[in-house]
Image 1 (cartoon, rainbow, N blue to C red):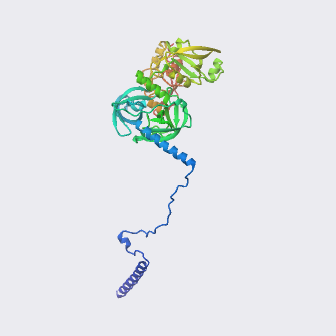
Image 2: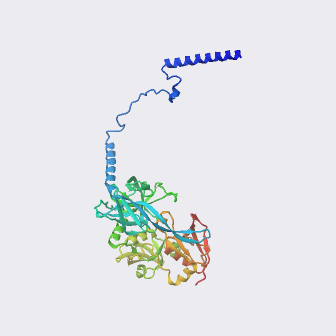
Image 3: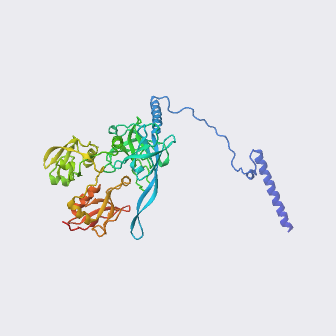
Length: 496
């Protein structure tokens, strides 16, 4: 026991001597000692660094820099001048939605909706241009200016096919409007600024260029500008301005590979100012947009058409169907006529033709050049006002109504929101019980083709359907629940 005690004493002495020696050395050299960690400071001692910050820019005093500085300053001045005319729009309303229960039955229920978008003041009286899809089915419209003032707004008129709506601020104040530029003179590569309210961040400005022209989202939106300026949900309805601060277009949509969570991927679309201005003035003066109406269904020239008719010219659009009592019939257009020129402009394709018809004045004779069975004919056509805006729902010809009823499919044109999502075709609104299509087609299906022919609207759907439904099976191309189905076939209805 005594031996263990002696060993313990010896170890204690050795440890104490070693500890005191180390402590003395650290204290002599200026270290904090061995107990600094008890005070919560266990970092190494900081030694100041030697440093020299530059006082001048590496690139200065050059003429090119002065030019860049002027560009930067003018860009800032431009946005500051434009911002007071840009507004954010908050909406609320009630929407109907179709739901299906576990037994496959469908019914309509209502739900509260809200949204936000952008707009631009275009008159000193407080008229605002925005997108139709921003205010669609909304009852409450609240507008916030860049200075924070909030106003209620009323809907003056709408142009769903162009995706334009006109609002009016409920105030007698005088407002700062922006003017319209000439979008026909816009060139690819020009600088533009997109201003709006993306994701609720008011007064956001992004810069880019016009990437391309004459892009299309639908049959009625055919001459859109493609832009590189970043736009996101909430930018819809805001202005795209040029370097003069004029409205060159209205931001409308983005391309996104994720339809559920859309975000900017470098491709945005905007409605040209000339189209917007015409729609605006029509709404302010007449209460609705005015577009020319010809009353035909047309198709692009294909190899089969050239072979069948012996047509060898470039361009043009072929007439496939003529609505009775329409301007086309009154001007004596015939099926298989190929329109070469409309109002002295060469026709490139059906898209170009429809665009010219929509933009042309009504009740004014317009020169048209046709190709008919190898001969060139010159006619004059007097357009009337489009009876149902663009893509009017022509009635099914009386001799085919029985066939259409036997098929049993009721369809509607796509809404603007559906078009922006990238859908094409028509939406099935109802399928009649015990009809030919009853076990094949479902309510809510999007039919984008009939017999391998692309369907763009309700008129074309019935036109292609009735070509075959009476006496042979009809193939339908359907998009259902986010998937493209294999072609489905409905049997002939057996009506002559």
